[in-house]
Length: 590
Image (cartoon, rainbow, N blue to C red; front, side):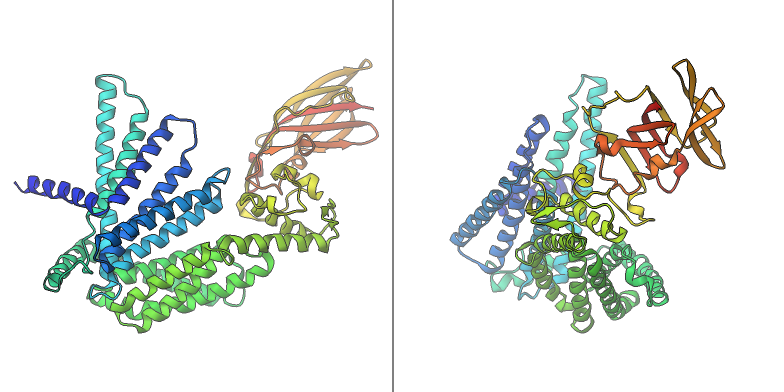
């Protein structure tokens, strides 16, 4: 009977969660309905979906706050009303945006993270229950709900597939609808059903100990997790720390301060140390004891070095939202390391309000990540333009002769502004500015420092409906150029004024040339094929379409003129032999 009893308790737990979190349940149900509509419709319901998800988070935190601090039912209704107003306010903020931009998504993600931390921290404010226990409960509940939801979805998918194969054809959207119900409706409610009721205003003095026993059981660390944390994860962190400290000490006078690729690694390291510290706070063995004693102190200098490195790099790149968050999190991690080094384990919860404050600062103007980064990038761009006399009377004067370092500054600033859709906030930029207008606006192609690994692969195509004037040429040829195994071959033969002409390729010492010959013995013009590809080495990988002007490459002398128009081009900077292009070749013999 045990399996039946357990199943009954699971269903009862879900029913209790629905009664305990009624507003959250309504928001999740609305989110599932909207997502189901989105599956079948071409209309964009993403704003409504995101609004209901935000509403579900807010209402869950409100319910936890009510249980901890309030007693009357009227207070609960008032808090639910506030949660509803905040949700409507969020929708009114994002509804005017033409689409969900990166800025909106990041702000929302940070807000949801803040609500999650509040969900963990609020039930234990001034409580005998520690933040560590609340964190462990949420940690276990999350992975339990994820595991059971995953198993449930796999099972449902197998059943749908079996019906589709054996009985009758099932619409392919059945899988999407199943995922919608499982992961948007079932998984969050199952997660909430695993969260116990903490001692609060509703608790009577005589049953506080009973509450604590229940919470103690819910927060008990499973044996396999104890082993995993103590004897696998902590030793791995120790080894990684030794490697990290060795790298820092060996490069402290040079490369460390300019190695931006180290930033995400150090942020991940800091997050891992803090999370593991909280998880092992109530596990007592030699490994966890030494970890709690040593690692917060080790974390502080590592994070401080990274903060200094990130701040130093701001003079060249300005502030972007990513760098803003790296520095802000570094400050939090350093503060957390100091506090965890000296406060008793039971006081770990002090880092929760600090993290919430930092997160709120990062999304609320005027010192939020996006306002600051937008102002910084516009300022750095304007400074580079003024320095090179490219900005006059609020209009840009194209100039392709400026130093490469300034070209790189302008390129990176413009790419960031366009990526974040901030170009509309720059009064001296064209209203319809886009990636494709970079060259005509500034007078040079996008420039990146040689060896920049972010754009080792580039794919470009000619814009559709691009007219091509061929009136001045004698002939044109369509040709697929590849730098790999390019043997000597004849691209095309043609006749002009009773003389024979040939356009051929010739490979010599890993260099491929295209040569226009007359009567097979007189060379009229020679073009190095790799020049065509090198023209686009400065382009950003996010750029796809190019204008006819950008697509055109011309070589000319007193005997002939050859123009190449790129239809499609694929570039691998680190393996040039794999470069290829679809070309229209226009030939004019003088």
